[in-house]
Image (cartoon, rainbow, N blue to C red; front, top):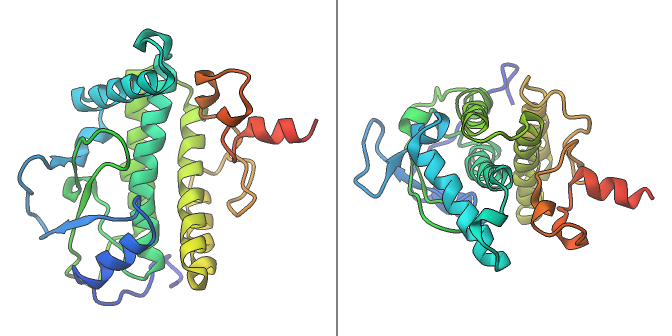
Length: 250
């Protein structure tokens, strides 16, 4: 890594790079399109997700319906803030994984929201398309990921639904750490680079208030609220949750 945080860039081609990302897992897999192109529908601009838009509100409502169906309860029994947190965490993970994975593979992608496209597919990681990088002088991936994607996404969700910014910030930290952990599992040869990339993101202002550093034993300092779907059920607490940490200390 260079002193300004840039990674040496090898040739970005739409075959090998995409295959290497997909091999890391479904949250890393992306499609690609020519720079400045506008993919045809059902592709939609990711800028919809970085503003308090109608599509983002609809995405949260869709997640709420899915959670209700899985729990066998009425939609009204799923708190809006729980659905908002779940939708936010899934989107944060979807955006963070390929950006971190591509950087660790030394093929940083252009994460500017104006060039990214998504599809509003139900369940699982939403389809994501990124512009092919044609220049060796790629934008600084960590700044773009946090400042132009994840921070605006967080603000937009918080504006649409009353949910704690601390919860949403923890979601971002969890998404970043999970992406690094997945790279380390799938590609042990890249583990050091993955954790270095996660640490760089944790040093940014948006994540600097997280009490615990990134790493295999990471514990977030907030809860994503999933436990509210099944209060009192230990399996409803995520592995990196602050509640799990407190339970283990008793």
